[in-house]
Image (tube, rainbow, N blue to C red; front, side, top):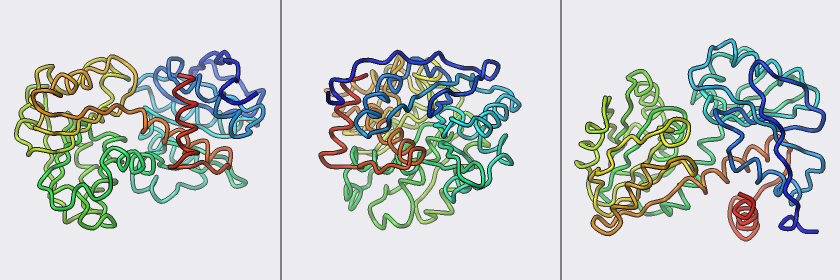
Length: 331
């Protein structure tokens, strides 16, 4: 039997901070908002079969956005003490884990310290180790959507909507000095929260101080639409707000005037996807290319599988394509 023929496995019941129970099989936990509806619940068994992770299971833990710090700490403490809990992938609560539970980690990797967030947790001999895998997954997905060399000689900007964990990670991908001249001519970031914008700005200035940075605190979709209308042709516009998945809605209006020939990248791949729908409507009249978050999803989860189960995973080529195809078939 091949991984493509693997029978569907019923997802384990989703846990909450109040219903945590120890694992009975080697387990990768998944901390998010609505983990039961994520495609990874169906994708992971196919990947486990393909990668030889015999007996390994995935189990979701749901916690609402803005939950008390005590709930975050309870979950991390639970993982630390759970013998068969091998690690955790974190989606919507990366910054919360990196701040509220910082002292529960034996070691934070350099990117986790820089970003002030934890998106992947592993268990080592000395305790829990925290990783920020969004910058790694974001860089891999970015290169697939905007091929290396695309920024050279271009006046296009990168516009990141949302200065949370995903937006901050993508900022690192876009402006770091190692990319040389293959960077946007300017980075524009919007958010409703001024403190998040300043945190992102600190990172942008640390890793790419020569890329002009514009921070815009917005209070409505109209204000965000005005920012987009002012951008040059060919710009990259990214929905990194979580709106459309973790929370309903979109950071832009349904009639937003996206830049001509823009690449509109929604980091979401499920949900109501209103940002993506707006981008698709602008395909004909504005030449917009709409991209969803599927490639980002695949890279993000494969990075977690790599760290937690200590297996090699491909990042490109036929072997990566096979894992992506397995995921599409399972979703």
